[in-house]
Structures are given as structure tokens and as C-alpha cells.
Length: 336
Picture 1 (cartoon, one colour):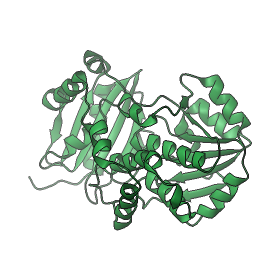
Picture 2 (spheres, helix red, strand yellow):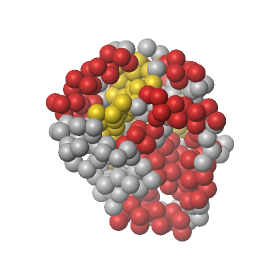
Picture 3 (cartoon, one colour):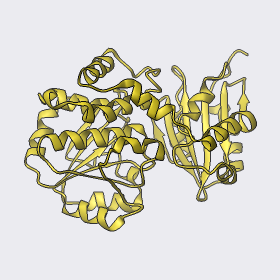
């Protein structure tokens, strides 16, 4: 990260620092936010984390008493924090709209200097300093690079490293994606040397499932899965009523799209979840097959070539029909 010292110089000149990340938080957005927060605390600063919506229940353990203020539950406080900030970090997103309409207005209108640290392609020009690295597997890895390349490795400890380790684990599908490099493992080794317990991270994140969550995932695979073998496309549509049937909590479908992608003959998986009159889509693919074009062209989304997201106001039935019609346009037939 060539701008590490420039970022730390600006941090040193700032009195009020706010850390933001995208809507619908995941392991990387929570992990990089907490990792940066604790790093800045170790340097003597007093930052605050302001997110658009709450942390998923399955990631609550990461907070360990640290506060993440969210706009959905405390809009007045987030508004005040962002208005008084002189430095705002924009983590794990590449455009102001990714924090939601209302919070994006606060971001755009804020007088603070803005720093983007992100790994998504095609970033917008909305910040003063940009550390955009689409070739890196996660924003959490970029935060470790910031610490290392600013000569602050001495402050790394278990508290800082644990959320960053989790961010990498979750955003790489437990290190299975092609974005994982030797450098990724070098930095992970550094975190282990600093006291991070990788077994505990895995157990608390992946081996602590509510019974309803397990039943929902079983139902999705056994009753809802639709496979188009000639194109290697798997679809998992879940209606709002079906999610309610299993007492859905945010994060209950995390990783489910990767389970669908693991089916023999599958090269593309699409999870559709209906909530509040919208259908949220998660796209995953293997190898050279790209899904971010489909997400961007038809579902107000985008992301990485092999991992993207989108949203639509169409019904889930209409969304399914639309994707069925688009499959031959975006994906080639496979030998079956």
C-alpha cells in the first residue's frame, strides 16, 4: 500500500475520526472496521465506527465491548458524528451509494477529509485519498498492510488481529478463492505470531449455529434449489414467508451461496432472499466465469468477477424468471 504513510500522516493531523463501511455488513466490513478502530486506539486516537445497519448476530462476538453505531438504530448520533468529523474512513466500498441513500448524503456533504480503503473494482471518485486494490482478497488484508507498511507492526496484537483474520477468512471462502496469494498467508502468519487464535475464530464464526438457521439452510437446499445443468447455474430463491418460518436473523444465509456452488457440475450460484419488498441477490462463480456483469446490468449491483451482489424490487418469481431468461446470454453451455 503505497499511500500508507500518507494515510497515517493525515490520521496524525485529525482530531475526530469516523470509520464507515457498506450496508448489509459482512465479515470483512465488520472485521476491517474493528481492526482499524483498535489500531487507531493503540496509536492514541479515539475514533468511532458508524455503519448503515446493525452487525449480524453471528458476528457480535467480535465486538468484545467495542461500539458500532448504526444509522438504522441511531440516525441522530451517526449524523452528529459524521458532521463533526475531520477524517472519515470509507472501508470495503467503492462508491458513496453503498452506505445507503440517507447516509450517503451525510458522507458526500461531510467537510471531513475522506480515505477509501477497498478491494472492489471500478471505484468512484469521491474521496481525498484512495487505496483501491481489486487484486487483494479483502479489505481486512489491506488494513494489515497499512499497519505493516507504516512501520507499526509492533502494535499488532490479538485484539487488533482477530477481526482482521476473520475478515480474510470470510471474504475468501476460507481461503478457497483465487484472490488468495502468498502475501495473504504471510500476513496471516504474522497475525498468528501476534496471538490470534485461528481455531477460536473458526469455531465462533462457523460452529455456533442456531437450530432455526440450520433448518433454514437444510430447507433451502432440499426444497428450493433449482439447477440448470446445461449452464452449470444453481439458484436458491427464498421468500420472506419462508425466512419468517425459520425465524430469520441477519446472517442466517451467510455462506449458503457457496454451498450451492459446491454442487457437482455447478459453476455459478445465485442466492435470492426476499425482505421488505426487495429481493437481495448474491452471485458466486468459479474460474474465469464472471457474475459481476449480470449483477451490474440488471440488478443495480456489481462486485468482483467471481463474487457480486445486487437487489431488485421485482417479486421473487419475476426475479427467477428474469434470471432464467438471462442465463443463456451471460453463461456458456457446459458439457453434461
